[in-house]
Image (cartoon, rainbow, N blue to C red):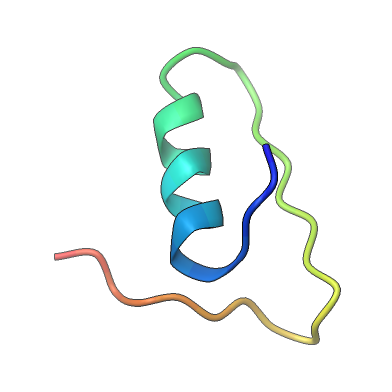
Length: 37
């Protein structure tokens, strides 16, 4: 899965339904995404 910010983290959450582990790799010092309500 490739994506950054909201799209990358939302896709990671979706894929977590089908996988035991999801690895998020970020090249910036911190992740940036909106809070999920």
